[in-house]
Length: 317
Image 1 (cartoon, helix red, strand yellow):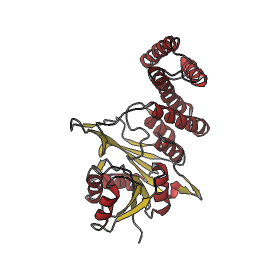
Image 2: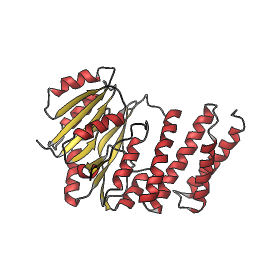
Image 3: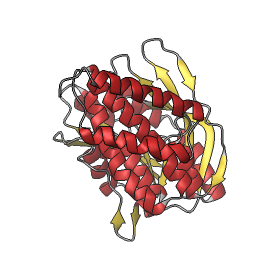
Image 4: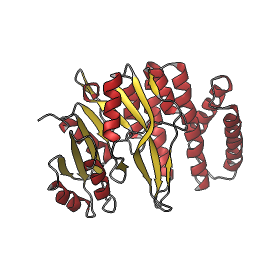
């Protein structure tokens, strides 16, 4: 029996949050969906909780795999999804009750290839909620859409705020998949490669997704390294398929990421690779003439690079 939307939920060691996540999906105002919930080898009680929930609703399809990472879990679900559209939900986050209805209504109204909504940050430590105002709302082509999602603030290349078409994910036998070797920002790579297949994209400046900011979350040096790997995949692809404005926006984000990566290494007393230092210089020189996110931001990053190079004098290679 076919369904309209397949919601893909990878799960790993989220026993405190997963039940709340699943119930936020089951309580949707739109009901014609299936949930493909993939337990990626959890070592806590997440798998047990999922097995109990499965008896509450036939729309829940629970799978248990040995641990192989979030990308492999998502790819496993994509291969088995029956819906005309895909959504992705992280297992510690929640939907607002009208999330699926809002996304699908927008798609049916404008017949766009991708629908993107705003989102909210929910801070676990303070229990405060911050709705993100993304500014633009409407329909645009793939270049403007990509530019909007690469901006430092706004819609972003997040996976979880989007409604994807199955026939574009599985276009002409060329199935888009998540790169299992990436441990960070694999969603950005997937979104960029999907948008390249789009003719038009809808943006809704209304939040239907609650992104949990956990008190225990931290940015580690390893995450910075993995982020750089994702950019190294995306940048050549964008140069081939998107306009200069999009490319400059992504390169700006890459420039900022490179600086952050190098600063984290220096903070830990480690000398960044010569290639990273050279890449920082390449991007800095590019933005002397290219379109910057802001002149103030560029000057700020120049100062950060100067400080970085001064600190490198005291770091042993």
